[in-house]
Length: 140
Image (tube, rainbow, N blue to C red; front, side):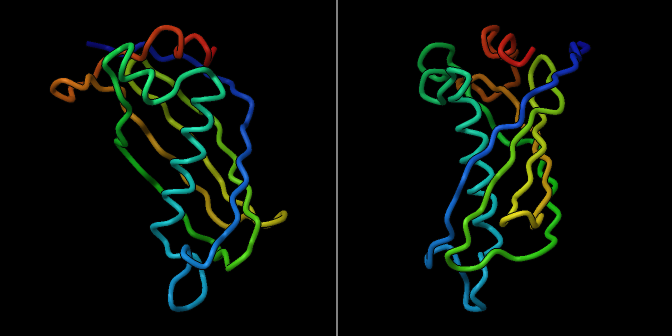
């Protein structure tokens, strides 16, 4: 079954995160896995800004999003007390998945570029399924 591809111009969403001591490793920089948490938080807030919470998607539609692909390019580390800005943008949407481009900045310096593909799946069986129509429409 072919997936419907649709261009999805989107306004970039911006999320701010402060680096706490708990986020750093022995070298004093953000531990690499914590960037994935920052990115996830920003994608969640992006969805919520469009009226779609994870709980509502599960309760109303019986669906959830699962990470299908992650590409992360580290350029420079973040450090304790840095104020980070995460820029999140949808660069592609298909019937059953969304592709996000995300970047993390400290002031005006790009630290990390990433691309994440999330798949919409039914909670029963975790099989791919179509995005809820109202969320798909929000991305037009």
